[in-house]
Amino acid sequence: MANHKDIIYGLYNDEEDLLKAVEVARDQHLDIMDVYTPFPVHGLDPLLGLSESRLHIGAFIYGAIGTLTAFLGMTWIFTKDWPIVYGGKPYWAVPSFIPITFELTVLFASIGMVVTFYVICGLGPGVVNPTIDTRITDDKFCIAFEKGANESGAAESFLSSTGASEIHSKTI
Image (cartoon, rainbow, N blue to C red; front, side, top):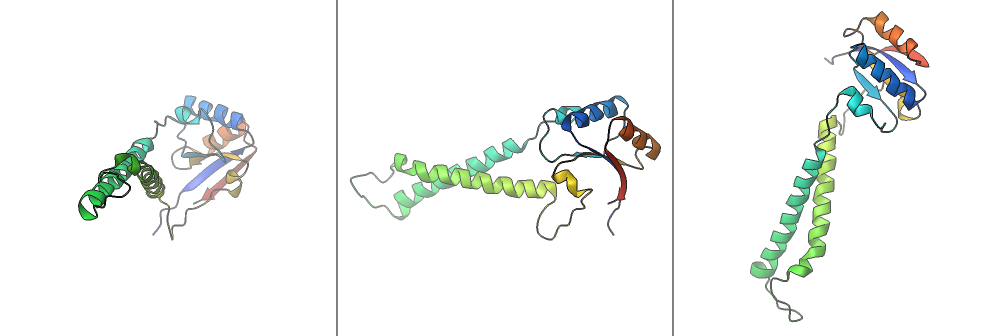
């Protein structure tokens, strides 16, 4: 059985209003469930207390695996498995390995990051994630509170006092 959450959320028309509201919520020690925006908002992560992502470390590791796969694979192919001298080049012609090594570095990093992103975000085939409001992917900014974490009246009065254009309750 799925866990359902009762939430109350407010929609804002401008990212500046959203940033001010998050700052006020932090000052009032309100427990924000999540903030939804249609595009990245500069300065929102520090206000929410989020640390820097470590995804770039994963990208480096995936790229390094791609580099090693390409370089070691070509080394084995051209020196042990299929040693052919063509055009007077030596068996181990490292400069000719560079284009393929670059391409496999990019390929491994990109595929690895897509898979990592999908796993971290809980996405994939057959996964149905609830949508709070369809407009938050278009032109609205949203602050959502769990009704159990904050008193419902406190969250509602907070949202109205910080300039939310709409306030709604929903079970997701």
